[in-house]
Amino acid sequence: MKHSIEICIANWDTDKDSLSKIRRRVFIEEQNVPEDMEWDEHDNSSTHFLATHKDKVIACARLKTDGQIGRMAVLAEYRNKGTGSKLLQFILLTAEQQKLKKIYLHAQVSAIPFYKKHGFTTCGHVFYEANIPHQEMSKKIC
Image 1 (spheres, rainbow, N blue to C red):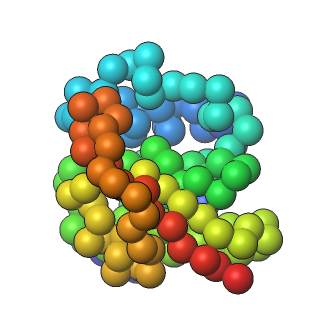
Image 2 (cartoon, one colour):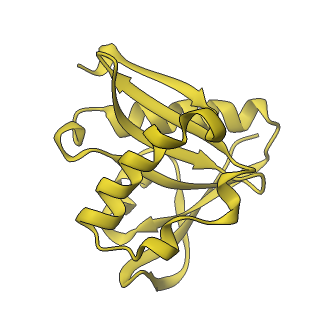
């Protein structure tokens, strides 16, 4: 399945429904993130990404202008099948093309091994966002 996953840069204005659908399912419904914490002013200025499999939208993420990767969400039935890795690799390539020197993210503690596998290192202490433990991670890409 890994090879049949397509990744593209999305447009918040035209792809908002698809992006929102995935984020709602993963963050609001599965992880109980309060709805008012999920949507913010950064959606308008970020680069968004969509992953599809056989024309079905299955994952998304965004890259803020300051180099922060966030809102990375993969539908449950597509996890642990290479979807997240393929999406992250595409984001890293895009960040490099945008000439970002360093990227960072707030990883859910359970996802730290995934990001370490892709060359990210942890920084600082564990903190909570939406009652979920996170840790900042970063990676130099130049």
